Length: 351
Ligand code: UD1
Image (tube, rainbow, N blue to C red):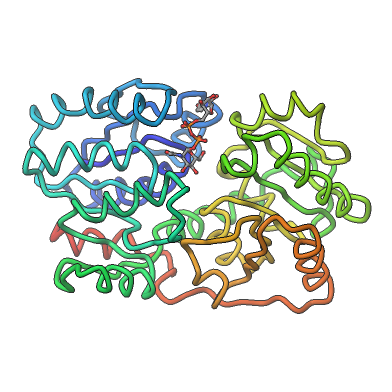
């Protein structure tokens, strides 16, 4: 059984659901409904041809406690009825935490896909989700060697850890050509390598009007010489309305997976606070500036194209300057090779 609930989950379950089908062991997919707008969910199923969810819990939005509790309550009877041999939960969203907890208490084996990532910032809800999900999981499917080190340092036995690589690279490798043949740039009036892409949705950056205003002041300075396009996450809308818009930045609605990859791969640089975008830009070899003080994906800095700069004005401008001077390059980390779904199935012993 696979779980998917929020936007960053869908591109992670796509290759795994397809590989299980290929091996003649079709999965049951449970969609929790944490994300429900068609632009945040359906479009990913359509574009990536993910077989539709078998079960939809339709929980919707709520506070962390409410959302997590609703998912747990709705998921328990599903798990009791189906009793799968494995529950695979990807990522670090509330759906990952809620479903892994239910399974652990019912004695259903849990495999965590994207295990071992640590920002060590407990103010991030995702850090709590990561640590707890890993702790109750039987099989830890790690994307990179640093994640294996984190798990071992926390006392996780080595035999429960499988280094499978980054499954996002499977989806990206398989869809890059399709993404780049779309009219995304033309439709937006953009020329390749002559614009920057912005994505922002972390509560620490977008929930407080003063924080978002300060960040937008710096981004507006960058936008005087490089057009910046900003697809808006729904979370940002109320704050943006309160501060009266994004100035010179060109805002658009949430983009689909293929449009996101098209926009990233042709960007001169990407400014983001997303986890997945740090990884996708490293895979694409596109310079990334991460507007956070910590990252659970340090390999994107040590090996990839990422610079971790926080939200300090001069640090952001310096990072952009380094990119313009051609100082930023990187490589694809080991096992980010598009074959992770195979390794996951092998680790689950699905012949
Ligand atoms: C969630 C994840 C975050 C992930 C992000 C990707 C948690 C704790 N957070 O954050 O790790 O990076 O998804 O998008 O699980 N909303 C809509 N339509 C939707 C979904 C949400 O309008 O389809 C709005 C609602 O106002 C909602 C708000 O976005 O209250 C936040 O949604 P939520 O799922 O709580 O968290 P995200 O910020 O999306």
